Each structure stands twice: as structure tokens, then as C-alpha cells.
Image (cartoon, rainbow, N blue to C red; front, side, top):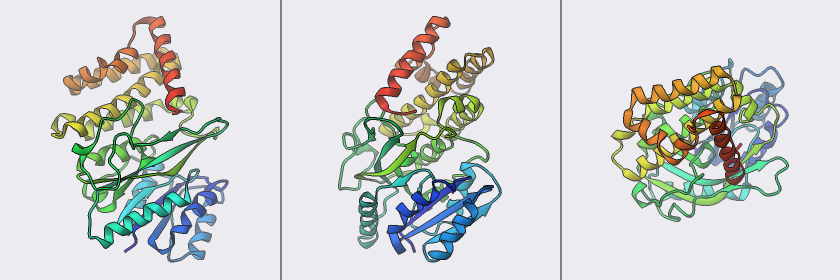
Length: 338
């Protein structure tokens, strides 16, 4: 069995997928690279096939009709034969030295017969044109060099979250929790990282800057103007996060607190984008989102709406909305997210 399966979702990725794949090939026979061609109409399919022929024991090319990022990840989970599972998007890459450290850690688990549900490492925002690169580290909150549980964590700082770029899940855990991401939906990375957390008992933190998250392409899904155009998909994911995890049923206080904060930032982003769009239709959608949350879970509604961030994004009137957007812009610069 391979140590690690890495799925690389590709849609019209001919211009940058090689750099991603080449950064992962040094893992050698310990790693399985699953290049999922998600109905591309450029040279993505032939590049995937080329690598599969050149490295038949390492690379598999999976060709499917277009189903979106989530369906590409689903295909990866279905085909994975590795003990652990990682998603690396085709315009991102990994740092080779950090990658070697991760594989050494996974190898150690197998040799010592240890079972770990989730491995967390750091990631770097490779933001085009940025003078300094923001690194999402976790050494202030997570113990190093030991297998730990949620009880051993310290509280995360504001703006500090476990994202798709940070996680390597045990493959069987993803299957056991029946994780299936929705088709033709952007922003499902939030579901990918959030939903399985309630099934995680053991965690290990490797303090290396593994994942390089590129931000800068004009057609990138995290560009604000594109997110506003796709706001219905952001809201869909926001609601699915609420529906798939009943926070009040989580007994561990540290985990529940973290998941509430993660849900809070996704809800804040939904609300701010609806405000930023400036249309009456989207302001109405913002009211509908809060109504949906209130009808589904009164306590969750109270926690989200009357926390500091919730109050900030619900200031009344046009002036209040301007203050909300201003605060959001400041937090963008401080945290480094798009």
C-alpha cells in the first residue's frame, strides 16, 4: 500500500499543472498521484496521460465528464489506494523539503504501528505581487512531535483556521464518514476540511511550510468579483456546513469552539460578499441566510449573529454596511486571505 494518495483536480490546467505534478514526483514509490482531468477542453488530458505513461507506478490519469472541483476530489477518494489522502490543486505546489519531512513522518507511523486520523502542516499564501508571503502556521496552538487529541490544543488566534491546504486525512476516515462533495459547486474545500473533523480523534502536527497556495490568476475562483458572481454557490456550501454538522451534538468543547469559529468566518464571507455586491437582490439574500440559520438552530443563530464578527456585519443601514466592508478589508490585509 502507498503511504500517500495525492489528488490533483485539473480543469483546463495545461498552463500550470506540470509545475504542480513535478513538485510531487520526488515522493517516489511512497506516493500515488491521481491526476483527475475534469472534462477539460485544452491539453490537460494529454498531459495527464503523458505523466501516467512516464511514471506508471506513481501516476494515474483519471478522465471524467466535468463535475467541478468537488467531483474531482470525490473521484480521488474513490480511486485512492494510499493510507493517507491529500488534495493539491493544479495551480498550487508543495515545498520539496517539507514534503520529504511529511513522508518521513507517515513512514514512521507505519513502522511504529501508530494510527493518526489527521496530519496538519503549514501553508504559504503565494500571492502574486505581495511584498511578503503570509504563512499560516499552527505552532502557537498545536503540540509538536507527538500524537494528540482536541483536548491538547490551545485556542486558535483570530484569522487562524485549518484549511484544505493544511490537512492530510487518513483515507479510510474520509470513506467511513461518507464524505461526498456536491457536483458543479465552487468553495467545497470548506466542506472537505470541516465535515470530517467530527470523526477525528488523533492528530499530529508537522511544523513545515508544505503547501504553496497560489493567488493571482484573473480567473481564480477566490477572486472577489468572481465570488460575488458565484454567491449562490458560496451560500449553498455555507448551508451544507450547517446541515452536515450539528454543533450542539459535539461533546468536545475545544472542537466545538473551533468548528463554530470556522463556520462563523464562512458565514461572514457570505454576508460581506452579499453586501459588497450592492444589489437589492443580494441584500435580500443576506436576510434570507440569517432567517434560514435562525429557523434551523436558534442557538447557532445567536452565536453567529451576536458574536463580535456577526455584529460587525449586521450594522444597520448604508453607513453600517460601509463600516462592515471597511473592517473586512482591514482583516483581508492582516490575515492575507483573498
